[in-house]
Length: 142
Image (cartoon, rainbow, N blue to C red; front, side):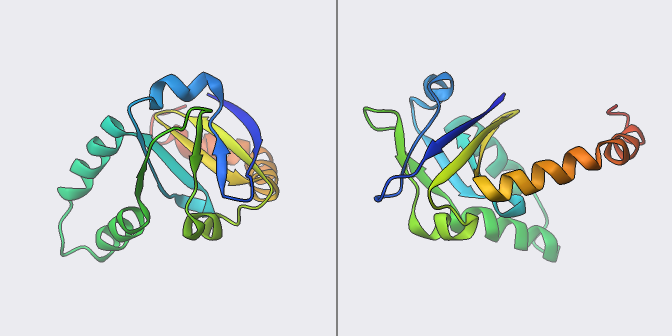
């Protein structure tokens, strides 16, 4: 959980917040996420997600498209000695990352956002909070 700001350097390196580093000590997978952010998973969580996606029927166009988006953009990484990862240029471009990034702890993954995109998205979610709660109530989540 949490929200942290870190700068990307000229080589595309981004520090993972110290509170999350131990979870990613054995490696991680970074890939395209939803809403133009990046998703970061531990290796076991990535394997679990990959297994679930692998069980989806190939005959479903939306399953194929979602799998393509996640797997084609995925890259396995290791933290360097300073707790940083190199975000590949194609992923930086996808998420519009330049300068300051916002790293969110979201359940079993991290999300990496361009600061401006996150501020816009956060404002929209905060404004629509009541509507979202009503929709989730029908699923028994709220």
